[in-house]
Length: 537
Image (cartoon, rainbow, N blue to C red):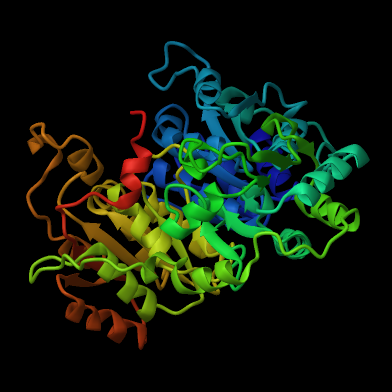
């Protein structure tokens, strides 16, 4: 067989079951080979959307996913989504056709492009190493949690692969569990033994039921309160000691209790500026310990989160009240959720307060949901006011802070979790950037709810640059509901809470088409998290 077919079959043989992309002449045979080998292919309307769908699917399924793109512009169109995946440590293989002839109009330095955005560049340079390189790409994506750019030169794709190459392939093994050292386990146990006000912050590396159970058991033993980064939101849902999200999205009570901690242990979490409010959530004198199984994360304890937590528990004396006081229990029950914090409803007859909108949607939508959120001034409202059932309930593609990724994120998450209602929360700017993928939602028959927080502006810039001329970031009112109907959606324009009856009616069934909610939201104020996000800008 030819290299294109051999690489496609090898990627599937190495464990890839889902492929996203836009097909051109350069990746036609490769993509068909993956489909013939048993992978599912989803065609997007734009390579940028395909990249983000693949990213979201990999995050929510826990599997290596493939993005298939054409040479040159196929890759450059996908770069923002690839950058987001690379920054997030998503196990993704980008299979990109490549032109190596500099005089071709399709030629760009694809290796340099991949390296520039944080991906691992590889190339299938010959027929002899084609299958091995494909398997190595999957191995690196899986074991190193990296986004790998696998370039496939056109002239190599048509070469004949030696006989028995696939039969002799060495398929990647599962990622090995990293065991913590006995010294690190003892040191962390001592930190927790001395602590009177410990807080655990769990991140992407703790997003599993096993890690959750281990962390909850250790927290019970040492009296720790439980928080997550935004990407792990929902991990501790149901625990009376959960602070929800640590960082710019935190409720006032959560921020107060995290700042008061004398020990903060980050589990699979890098404690970024987002998660710590630029370090202000870490109180003076607090001991900080980071546990991670990736040496590149520069953690204080190198080890798998679940295994480390269980070994620290075994080494612990146990039975401490810690931060789990009666007063804190009462406070958490009453006001840790942002929806329980009183606010002045600024809704008018023409525009709805985004808090009022989000709380009403939270009450209407079924609990079993997967929420995807785009970037922008609005993003804190759906992220924190829409509850999620567990750590698989929020797909948060914000490492690069690009707007326009939210709808494609929701598509990838929906395909990974078909048992849940997908909810895409977008601003009007991001919705219009990614509108081409409304076609993909309808074509796939996804029963999705798309909520557009529409303030007719790039709201973050409006509120950040107040006092300057703002005409360049404000726009005439757009009927996004009409746009959605053109793609085959049901759609409703919401200006008041009463308008949400149409959402209740859609939820009651039969949901034969997806629903878009064009919510005209109050535009006069910036969201509470925006001040935090722009500190230092």
